[in-house]
Image (cartoon, rainbow, N blue to C red):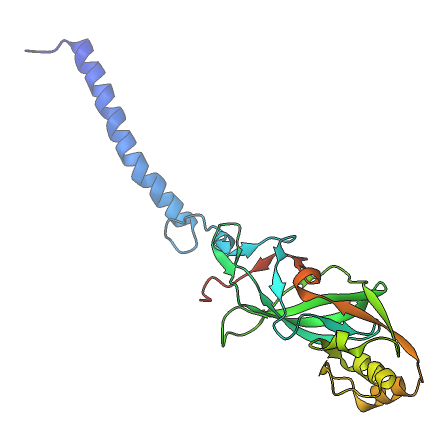
Length: 226
């Protein structure tokens, strides 16, 4: 069947349009490739931070202190302490980022009339390198006044800061009945002993209830760390 001239013209226009579009697509891709420095089609690169396990600031970390049930120190004393994470902490994506058993190293430091634990670093796995950790406890202001009338047995089994041990030893006449922690030098101990106190005020820390930590900034773990 022979097509009329109007139909022939319409068909020719349609074929020409399809041909032009087919040619234009490769040309457009070629121009995009030429615009990129490498000559290849460039894809958008996304930030890989979404892959990093992250625990947000404000998250609480339950810990325990395996050395004793309480820590006794003077309000002016700084004592190094290592705490153990009591339960797994998950990231915002739901995977375990801080596993139970991780070791948190830091110090009990004087703060606002009491003492506060300030974390410095955390060891997530045995033999792993420590990584920085920005976390603190609330300030513990629970104190006890100790005099010669106080029964020294109340401190048995407690970890005693070196300075607290010195003043308690002065009051009770001996220091070897307690486990002494911390690294106060002989000069500091001598200065404390020479004060001739008949009573002393100490801060009593109960780790299971006093040392819940709060992250002060986001904690991000290297995703390659296993």
